[in-house]
Amino acid sequence: KRVAKHTRKVGQKTWYERLNIKQRKIVDEYLKFSQDNPGDPLSAVCDAMNEHVGLNLSHCSFRRFVQGRAK
Image (tube, rainbow, N blue to C red; front, side, top):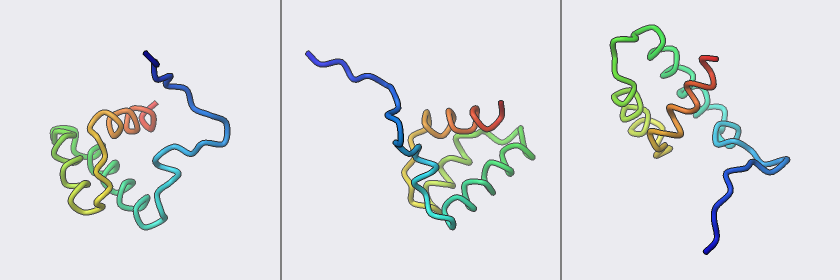
């Protein structure tokens, strides 16, 4: 049984780095929105993002990304 190692290879891009500029702009806008409106559940923002960008981000990868940005 092989265990998937969650290590990032050198030179491997994060999913954010894989986005094109237009998609990044939308991601940034949604992040700003979620920071400006903390009462808004992040899942709603994530769902709206999925609809607009069509990135189909999983909740955990999006949350991880937001937490990474917040630090």
